[in-house]
Length: 221
Image 1 (cartoon, rainbow, N blue to C red):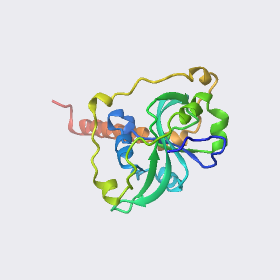
Image 2: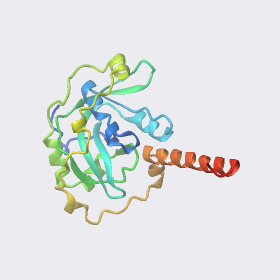
Image 3: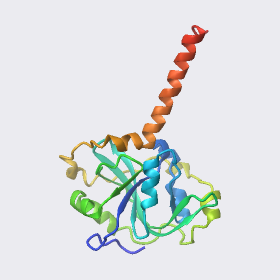
Image 4: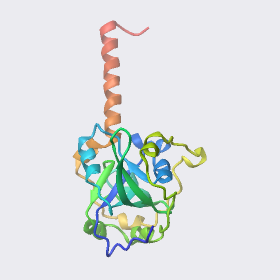
């Protein structure tokens, strides 16, 4: 893929989470890069389904994982949306030209608490440190095959891990100094829409159900 010229770029930048339940061992980016796609199937979040539907050809997807709540995230790669298709269930699938960038850096969060966070290019220019834009410049080229994302590819390909690579990689913290004074995020609606919050809420519900059963049936033996 071509080098991103941030001064000429006019489309949206989409910071996109790729670890369901915030579990790095469940990362989806390996499959996405193999197939040249990006997808979102957390249909319980109507807000984020709507956001995913708003992503257009020419938008830039940046893979991210929140690091310090309210302050930082780590970015793991990026790609340009080149087309839109559907899988055999009718779910929207983005065709993405993924870059070869494998360096991981830590940058300001910009309030990106949900799985999908769309940011205006002017805000990114204003709030991101120079290291982020240098990171974009160094990722030209294609990380995976350029084949089209067919319905069969998007639906039937299985995610395979190299377990030696499943652990969170070493992070280049070259932008740590730029994080000084970053304000804590206050958009709690995005936090409550996140998969991490939904997972926590479900676990709490099951715990309360267990307590109710114990109280109703007597002490456990």
